[in-house]
Image (cartoon, rainbow, N blue to C red):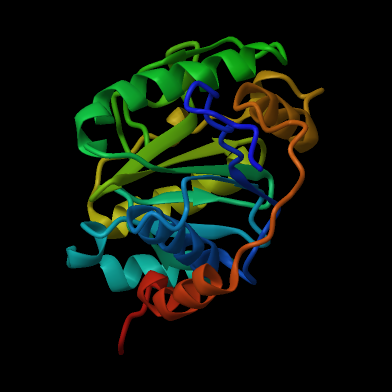
Length: 263
């Protein structure tokens, strides 16, 4: 006989926590994020985190970028510089990152998810600022002049260099909040972003590119990963496994995340 009663508190929500890459490349990782969001919209997933460093350098375009006349040349320039290419479902413009970066995707099943979109940008942006502060990086919320993928809720250092970009996608009864923390490889990112923005005919100042290690060369990827995991309360979480249904959905979505050009 059950000993629980109507006054018992609900069981605590245990999120799915994915640590490290799940797919073989960034188009696959973007497809996983898209699949998690769809599954959350269906109620099959309540809450999920995916924290990982990409397996290879990548330039990821926004959907709007793909409609620009110079898109094909931008893709070729990125690939010629040794970067994989992909297209993301969340908002924003083109970004670039290497294996010395961290992506944190947070997915949640939530009714009226669109109503709190602005609040999430501020709340999670401030959480990123605080996480960096715990490892000695003085950061703040706000865009910097000439930054890639400009947004009011970027995380910057000294008001002049961008360290973290954030983006969201909201669907019926679910949301995805994605953060990109650039830890190292500033010069390489400046070069590829300069070429890509030139082909897309978008404004960009390479001096706006920042990295955590430019602020403090003693910091490493593991330091930043630990800070993020602690800030989001998943530092002691047991790594989860992607269920078969979500993995299969991601597999079907992956072709749509590739930056394909013809000619």
